[in-house]
Image (cartoon, rainbow, N blue to C red; front, side, top):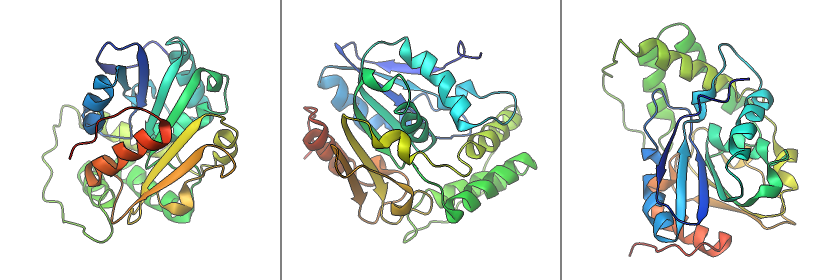
Length: 258
């Protein structure tokens, strides 16, 4: 069982623990995608550990259930998790883990553009990028990814992408297998019974994870936050709104920039 290769970056040394699971990305960015929330959490007394979700990829396609089970073993070794965060694929893994024996050791959950249910549109768009990567057309896969993470109302064309040929095969593998993990996804039941506070954030103009793809239990302490005119990157589209809602709904004493 491959659990020894989990890659992460860490900030702060507070007594509370925030664990963050990253989205699909061609190369690990060392947690920079979560940057808008790192300093506020550290200042609030958290140790923030951001994992490269794809660092535990198997050698070939596997189910999200099996993939998440291996992550459960990694995260269980961390002890109690005060805040468990997932973005896109990372959020799908988090929701799967809420249906596992890890759930009692998690206080609060934040989901960023994280699908609980795949529909034909999401499967089709993710599948297109996965197929392009598998066929070796990495540049077109990356251009399509750049387009699809933008809000539908303001898409800026992507110029030529300079691909590092030394890592091209790795990038293609990460995109292909990472997006394939989300195929025909349905995690609604896994997260439905989570008793803690849960906040799911998505862009109203997202081309990938849309309102139909997220799920909350309206009878629990779960809340959905649509970002007006937002795409797949709510921490870039509306960082203050996200941080304010995290403070208000999850009860974390975060400072919101003026």
